[in-house]
Image 1 (cartoon, rainbow, N blue to C red):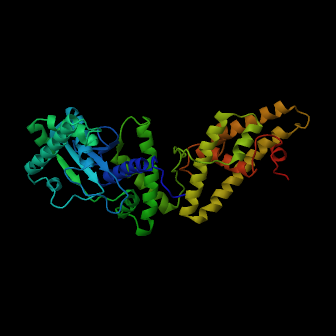
Image 2 (cartoon, helix red, strand yellow; image 1 turned 180 degrees about the vertical axis):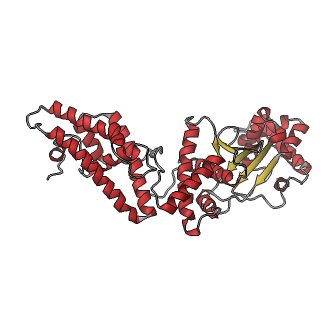
Image 3 (cartoon, helix red, strand yellow; image 1 turned 45 degrees about the vertical axis):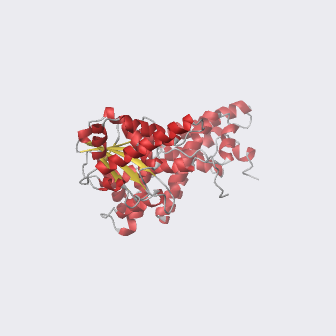
Length: 403
């Protein structure tokens, strides 16, 4: 199905992904290793570097030619309102305001003054005042005439906020503002990052960029869920970059999904739930099993895509996990023929819990850098789908694997 739902959140989701990836590219190109980036604080993206604070308001679009920016553009007035709202919290002598747009500026527009710090902003200030007054006047006339709804509803508050500023405050704000038009949209930004990785051979740049983006996604998630108490620094980004490049050169397995969250639309195999239900497991056991199974499955897929020869490493490690499981499963099967069903379930649940809590500590990792327990936990769930492992002593018979 390709028809877009009028209430779809697709544009909002893409806009947020754009914020995250734009922040990555912004930080990558920053020279200050102590630079730190934040999302959704004072602005969409905030960069603190060399004592300056850069507020980046992003306006994304997937259109091949989005409408050009003018002094009447809704995107412009929403941006001005966002900046006006935080003026009180800023040291304007060390703050810059950036409107980042996929769209271009309309030719001859007073907004062109924001392309160069050296251009006088007085004409732009006059044009903004005139536009804000026009919006205010037309709304007042419509109200007197009893018209509803009043015109310019989406810009009204922003225009009022701008008009309420003193002339000095308006001038200061515009003197610290810049526009960055014709920026690449979300479909191009990862390629832009790859193209900037000039210390990596060309054939590897896309791979490194993809791994950086995957790692970055985890950092942004932690930032937004407050698991991180501070923003992401360029030092962290460069360190991760060096680790990825080193691992690729040595063809080492690295982790990209240890803390990733599976999409809400993920459809897990029903056999996972059947295996867990067979031993009396409930929603808690299922939830964690699905989470780890998705992480392991995505990791295995990524490793194989990057280098098909790694498939042998993955399969050999699967065999190692099955061997360790087999010894324990054999123990609980011994003498179980006469045991009551509840006893069998209990033994199976213990084995399921072993695969989650103890196995990652008992078993050597698949590679030196894969130290998080997610891979062992998730791979056991992957193996359970085809019956290579199971939890109940009689799972193969009860779930039809021996038919």
